[in-house]
Length: 95
Image 1 (tube, rainbow, N blue to C red):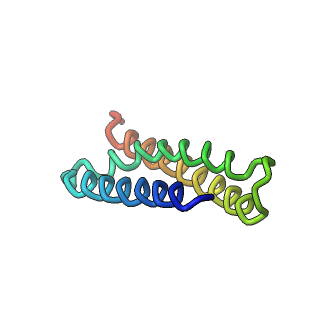
Image 2: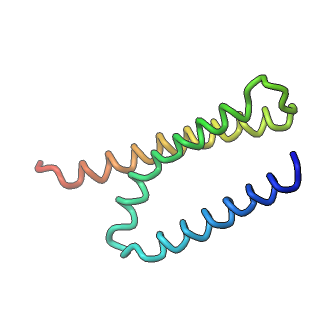
């Protein structure tokens, strides 16, 4: 990987982190939990990236293991997000 690509990837990481922090900081506390539990499905993007990182196209063993770890953690995040959302929605159903 050349230096220009590394700088571009670091720029995207820093910009995404900053924008994510600013967006979450502006959400009122009453909407924070429902918004975050529903948005955990965005981890599906992480799953796709991890699958690409752990494929057989000449990547190192380290990237394959990190990709597998990312797949596992993102899957836990997606399932947990849906579980929290389902539990919250059950609170609003009539008994």
